[in-house]
Amino acid sequence: MPEQRPVVVQPPSPTGGRRVRVDGEILGLARSIEDVAEFLRRAGLDVDALDLASTDLIEWRGGGPSVWSTGV
Image (tube, rainbow, N blue to C red; front, side, top):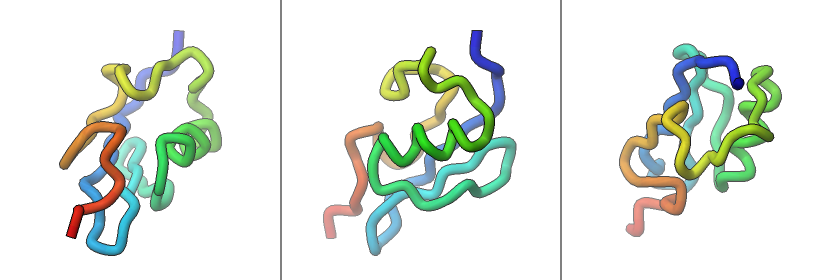
């Protein structure tokens, strides 16, 4: 079972990408769900056991896992 730590993917920035936070710490700016997976791996989370698009571990703000730009 994966370790439960708060993961928040912020809304898309005007220049594209979304900030990813774990336990309040910014891990980086993701431009795809693959980037989110890599950041979580580096943070020590077992992402192989997760479906990142549907897990309750991640709070997607400003759109789900298919939204990566503001559309502006």
